[in-house]
Amino acid sequence: MNKQELKNRIIKTIDDNRYSIIEAGRKIYSTPELGYREVETTKTAVTFLKELGLEVEENIAITGCRARLNQNSIGPKIAILGELDSISVTNHPDANANGNIHACGHNIQMGGLLGAALGLVKSGILEKLDGKIDIMATPAEEFIELEYREQLRSKGKIKYFGGKQELISRGAFDDVNMSIMFHSLDLGENNALIGPVSNGFIGKKIKFIGKESHAGSAPEDGINALNAAMLAINNINAQRETFKDSDRVRVHPIITKGGDIVNVIPADVRMEAYVRARTIEGMLSSNVKVNRALKAGAMAVGADIEITEIPGYLPILKYSDMDKHFKENLENLGLKGKIIEGGDFTGSFDFGDVSHLMPTLHPMIGGVKGALHSVDFNIIDEDLAYIVPAKAMAMTVVDLLFNNAESANNILNDFKPVMTKTQYLEFMETNNKVIKN
Image 1 (tube, rainbow, N blue to C red):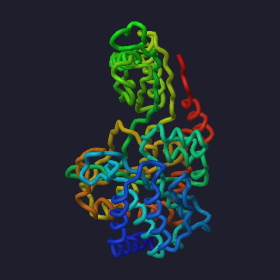
Image 2: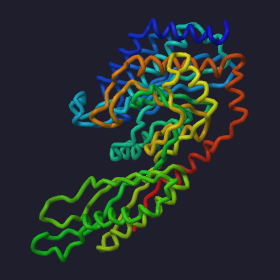
Image 3: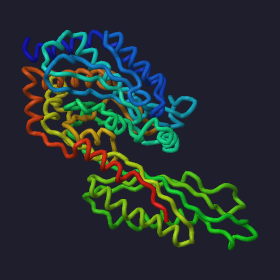
């Protein structure tokens, strides 16, 4: 069989199993779980993969799973990824009792991931490919519930708050040469976007430490930690004109604890913040300014401050050769003229960390309506959302691994990682610290 015949088999196989793929995505949508808590979601993925006759490694990073295809091949390995976790949008009509909802489309990613696996396995074309494939369901992409993740870290259950960070540190990508996945996005009249770039960020937890006193009769005896936090936010705002436009800096602090009771001067005030930028250099330089602003707020009222820096995500990088294959497959599937090339996202993805270690592919696919992480986000076209990316990812694997993995090897021969794994982990540790003042 030639390459197109292999792709045609994948297309037919996925079409023949369309309902089971969509049903898996719907089931995951019905059980939204936050990061490192994706027990039911992992079970759904494991069951689906086992029904394909695959051996599945479970709970690869507290939750998550991985199945390995074509492991006897001597060619390069491609990982196809999907994300398990949901977010919290309490007023979304489909949110569960805890306010959790897949308003970022990770249930769609998982449906697409499982569909791609099904297409590769049930089509019977794996023996025609000269390389290995890992199907990997990853936990904890959304960088939330920092206190919970700190508890996991203090117990030695995780080292990093992001799922792909944790998997990198555990060696899950040590034998992987390339990684691919997709994300959902409302693209209006268009159907897909290829070649996006994004911001990275440094996460922060901040504690302002003051002194209690009676707020009515003796406020002069206290040190108001809430005032320190408010001044710090204003200080950050005063820095905004100093950020380079090209760095696309975003800083968004929130106060998570403003005090204890109203008639006591607040002495324990907590904040969380991200410092986002388009480049690593921009992240670091902006973070220095933010820390200075935070410290100045505390100093102004005589409070102490404790800043806990948490390694966030790296900016996502794009690889044009990978994008080219995916675009051609989308066009083969009837999307010609409906594909945007290039996208600028000031949000962040933990897939950015992977993109600094190996060639990656991270397109955006439509079939949804409404902004990500909002009450308006919902699926409007299940075929475009689930089925098209399942086909396109599996077809792209064929492009990369067909004919002695000629295309994959050409990409890898020209590739030089921005960081080695050792350099990456060293960088992560430099941003994993507590600053007291």
